[in-house]
Length: 337
Image (cartoon, rainbow, N blue to C red; front, top):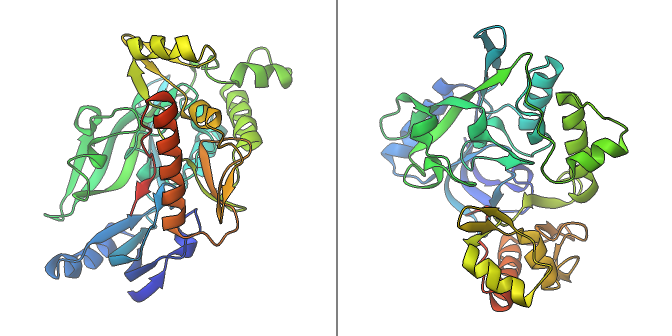
């Protein structure tokens, strides 16, 4: 265990916050061994995966644990279905590529999302018409109070839009150890209707796409508009896309006829990036922080020297300006520490 440990290399924003204590664990046994003294001394505990959905606005006065649990197993269910289980420390995109190389379908639209497998159920990660809950079977978790391993099925996880029990009342009560997904072996469901996938496939000259083609299209789209965290500090999409009542959307359409929206029943999901861009934030920089020039939904550590507080304050200014112009309050997707 390390004391007064820099977490700069463990968060994709590259913020130089420190943890009072820090440990890396490679097994459940090591994890329990690290947690026991923390429980007895009532330390706060923070679990780190890929560090892609976290913003440190201050030092962490507790024990930060980096989860390095690794391993992938498979169980064939029938001619068309297979269960694939990945440990929490597996890199998400590497796991997606592992499945695609074996021609297992279901994860292709989630290609190139930063982070690790263990954090994927926490906010029900999603992209291009697919969410974790679409292929999720269950996950094994460690109950931090009893230090016993429990299983959470789809219903128990209570997935919502970028939400789950692990972000609500289960927050700080469990750590995810592994996740099991049900994928297809033959009769793949190809999803190309969301976003720019169809256009990108046309650009690639592909008319009858495979799951590998869809993944390639998604990767091309993401790389064309999202900055690489290894090159410039960011956490991907900083805000959730807000969902507003249809009546409110219709009123806004009277004032802003180009407003974008995706209706669902009596509600409409409005792209946060569009709202932010209309408020003049795209590419705008204040001090060390900026909104990305190609995707205003992404806040970047423009100079590499930004503090977490600078990034948080920048996001607050965006929230305030969107609320003032559209009457919509954006919600941060990133976990604020």
